Image (tube, rainbow, N blue to C red):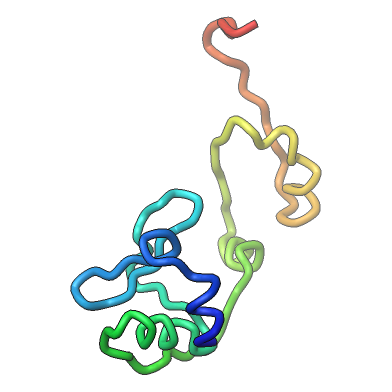
Length: 110
């Protein structure tokens, strides 16, 4: 993991150092992901690379997919501009219909 930390993970790109701790940067948004740590010893390897205090590894006791997480609820609702194209997936996974609500005004884009 230390080799991976040195070759694949760049400071100020994949992670930053704040308050003497390694913080992961979300690659999509660029935001700091508070409370998140890399798994399988990678986070400790990066801490060693950057000469900050190496903290104990965390352990994952259980994981759940988003699909199974949402199935825990009896009622689901949401609103998005892109659901119509995924209507079949919503039905196959959640048994949910997609209802298209027309715009209040005509679309200005051509």
